[in-house]
Length: 370
Image 1 (cartoon, helix red, strand yellow):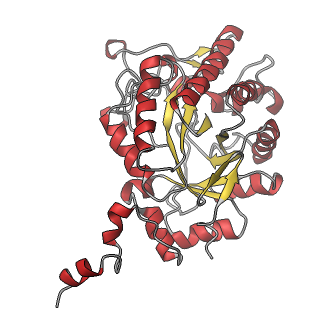
Image 2 (cartoon, rainbow, N blue to C red; image 1 turned 30 degrees about the vertical axis):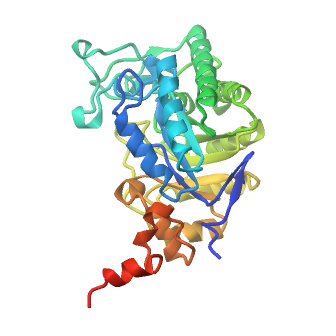
Image 3 (cartoon, rainbow, N blue to C red; image 1 turned 180 degrees about the horizontal axis):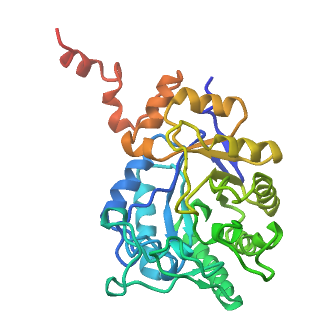
């Protein structure tokens, strides 16, 4: 029996299998409101056969968006648009739907990748950005404002508000984004945090604000729903976050009541050389966190395309869940096909079962070449 396609509990939520669709930015919202593109994109993933679908990084305030085209969850229009999508999905799928709540920090106020991906100019609607320190991500990017105590209070409050909105909209799960060089990573990494106060220097100081946000989100999000967090295992640059700091963070978040720990890497330093071509290249970070906190649910991600590799990761205990992203864009039925490859039932929706040989014998006979 496949371990990848066995159920497992994530806090109060039981997933039918260990495959999650990771958050993937679509850069297709208007004023933070998801559009018809998101309807078809999320609807397609909801019938993909995965055990969980997580909506893209969603800004908790306007200043926290990566681009002007990001989804947001700070006003009623955004909340209701997401609620409509969830209500529609529930008419044809019971797949749990989560949302990743995020703040881009110094990597905000940029254009979408296919619009250049650089820092916005004033005439393009650039806005003030915030970070742990007044250090730009790149030399030709805007210099962020080093956050004050009042800025930290504001960010904590908007994460809390977004969690309440996500709950009302009907999401089953929230994932806190503390990875990929966005705001919480900027505090955690010594490469982007050069503060000399209680929020800089030692790991304990650098983790202080991210853990404050994490605790506020834990308090605001219902215990009857699942809560996870995505964070970096490496900056891929010498002098960046250390692996013992990563495992300490994982332990602290688990102890705080987070139901899963999702390990990724990179994005915090522009010149980092990330070996992204190797399948499972980030797996060692998930392994390290799982070894340090064996009672935690750990999710691995990073160029995992092969069902056999995914099965081995889970079966061997290196991680408890596999997150896929590009594989799901390339093949929306990756989970169905992986199930067949591992000897399990394909699990297609009834409307699609004509694609499975032998389900409709008359159809098969009429359409089989002589």
